[in-house]
Image (tube, rainbow, N blue to C red):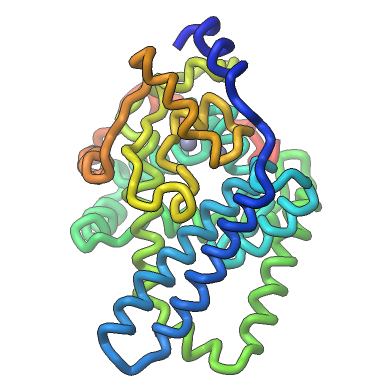
Length: 329
Ligand SMILES: [Zn+2]
Ligand SMILES: [Zn+2]
């Protein structure tokens, strides 16, 4: 998209989040949690399977709430976004502030071969697969068995980063405290009677949640351009590096319009409920729309490239140059 069209669309948008819609989304989240927990504890197989789906939807909803709060666009108050963000991050199994920083770098460096965190992690995995046979075999097995290895890798990695020293020799205090808050939250939840039993019963839901992150959310940036430059791309250039997905049923309250991903990259601070309005950008035929199934196919293609150890050579060459980029920069 060009700058003029971008500015014209931007002028028509409302950037203020609506409290009532936020409360509605929170009620949906609480409803999914309660219905999921109750169903998971029933002896009936049908109710257990239903509970698995509901609890996976609850975790995915937490992920989307955490994402919205990380942009300070879920509720009008910044404090409310921080509080809800930390609570939602518990359900999404992520340390809120470390995720927020990772996501900020994702938006700032979308498509950058070294500086965009997910691209870098994917290419590093590809390099490891091309160098070591055992890694290659492991990744191939993960793919064939539908193990969501990318999503799991990110979820685990982000818990370590707040406790590691950065390039400046210090830890990031805000991320450190935020991760501690998360760990204390889990400790308190573990004290609730029946928590361990529920955790075991929720394992299939955890798998479904990770799978949803891996094959639906991550592929918004697969099979697009990558670049290397010291200058981040402009907002109106993001359609070269991002895909959107066709809406799903109950797209607003259940999926917070996360499918409008290119639109979100154009306007990261635009609240979720306003994203469908950016659809007018499609008049310019600049946004790639994929359905959910297409995204899974894209994901399969990229996986095949990764496990065959043939990542883009330019990207690999770049990754061989030691990066001075600090995670928290
Ligand atoms: Zn993105
Ligand atoms: Zn975002």
